[in-house]
Image (tube, rainbow over the protein chains, first blue to last red):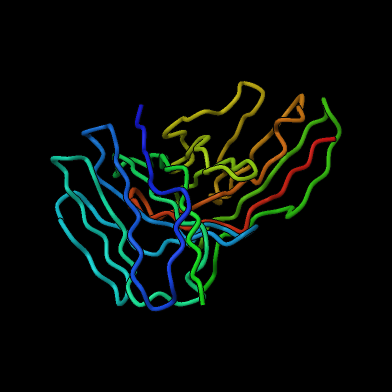
Amino acid sequence: GENVEQHPSTLSVQEGDSAVIKCTYSDSASNYFPWYKQELGKRPQLIIDIRSNVGEKKDQRIAVTLNKTAKHFSLHITETQPEDSAVYFCAASRGGGADGLTFGKGTHLIIQP
Amino acid sequence: AAGVIQSPRHLIKEKRETATLKCYPIPRHDTVYWYQQGPGQDPQFLISFYEKMQSDKGSIPDRFSAQQFSDYHSELNMSSLELGDSALYFCASSLGLEETQYFGPGTRLLVL
């Protein structure tokens, strides 16, 4: 089955700086890669997703890049704000068939004021 | 906008008891997914349904079963509960076979 590895497990950045979280996946058939933000005790919230026919996607301060050859995708957050503090999960699935998501272990992002 | 609804939000059970969790997807969504998230862990996929048929299966224990009904709501039935079943259980829904999954607020299950 799919295996998703995520790094780092904890990331502390100064407010206003950029944050980068990286994930790798093992199943070459995976073609859907969402990122979720989860605050303590709350639901995972989708912040951005990318499909395998796209190399990069941007939404305001958030961007995701995908390298299918290397089986690697990354989340970039620019101009970080205190409200960005949360746990971020990357995930992967084959998509298109009600497939379950395989999540990475999560990154605890801390924005230092 | 209407979101995924889960009930109950909190549940306390004793070991070896049974529990039923309910999920009401976003209106018009016909695909439902169940996930289990232990403390400090990532969500683990359990099972999914599309148009009332089981679609994908993950790490769901044999003690658990689920189904999707004609109105597309889903129920997760958990029997012979164990201490290790204590977790947050999330339901997510999507429209048809679109990949984007929207999560509900979760049910926090505590097994004593």
